[in-house]
Image (cartoon, rainbow, N blue to C red; front, side):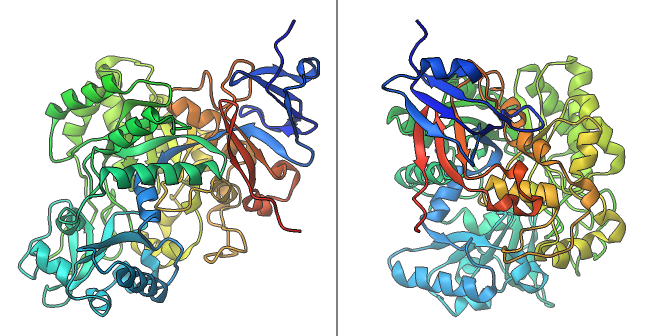
Length: 555
């Protein structure tokens, strides 16, 4: 006799993570896995079976975020979190309230401000000095590539008019060279490295808070895109995951990407190998190395083939951005990592950064042949058209953060003026990459932007934010680069599962796969495309266990 089901999802539509459209099919779950589909489900429903009515809803594989920073995001949510603000005034009010509520904190640390809220994307120390002059304040921006600091933070870091820019960053200055309060990239670290790092308990609490938040969006797995010594978050992140596993609290399938320390060389590979050997479980495993090859356009540190339209000021350098790792050394490192079976997860924003990452993989393919490893490049803001077909040719996946591909204030006020009209048209070429045969996966880069996958999918399809969003602009951004809804959803399901090396048992609804599932309140395929972002998660399951249930809507 067939085993009785634990769960039966009936009478609704199912997107299986692979097909172009949903279909009406029942799904049965037993012992944490999908055990039956279609007509086989009804005969296995018993007294213990929980029946989930899908009428008017959609069942889909648990969504997977291919590039996210959950521990950092969770810690930020539990501290001075500015992500809900939109203006200079919002941020100052939030920081002042936090400082007043925590008078015993020696340092006031937080983040989440957007650069478009300030002229030139560079807030001033003087504004923070009005809040506090005797304690240092360091507030990272949403993408964590810049920091807004007060004068006390500058003093403690020893940053003054005579301090040179670090090789991997820049200090914003006034006409006489004095720092004004914004530190980019490596310059941000000059202050942040002095601030107290989150304690082990704070990191653990941050991980659990992040998991709770991600579950509320139907997310059941992710790639933690930065585990290592960067900013004031340390390699203790792996200890937070270990503790969560020991406590039975980790309810997501996670791949960790170990940070490549750009000031060091191949000698760090031995430490990375040790971490891989330590973490190879079902819930948390390490098999990826994260290389940040360049910065971002907004602060002119993204590596560009041609210089930015607006050149740097007096005494500044890097008119064409910064390659954080020498391209020749990068090729050697990637070839070594590839030979050892490591996946490489690149951060590349500028067209030169993207090309350097592709060149490094090409060198690995020449040295090692086809290793079968899918390396991937995240962000892909500016991609030279000549490089589009290289993704498929080299087997490199495009890891997209689709929420950024719109005319929001950051794009209009900071990116377009720095890139110029012609280069603006080469941004976020999702449609072109897919048409050229590239494999797509998707992520949020939370806490840089919202982890809500439906908001990202909305922009991937519409190339603009929904009307209710504070940054909505009615003009679509390069609509020819839009994705179909099915393509965007596959990037968050089967596409992301492949990047995590788990596509055999996650990312799709098939008999034998883990019952990592999400139920949403509508079938977005049956609604207008401009309402995709209204989709809400009703319930999330990991291995058949309900890990999130939405609160009932008040009548």
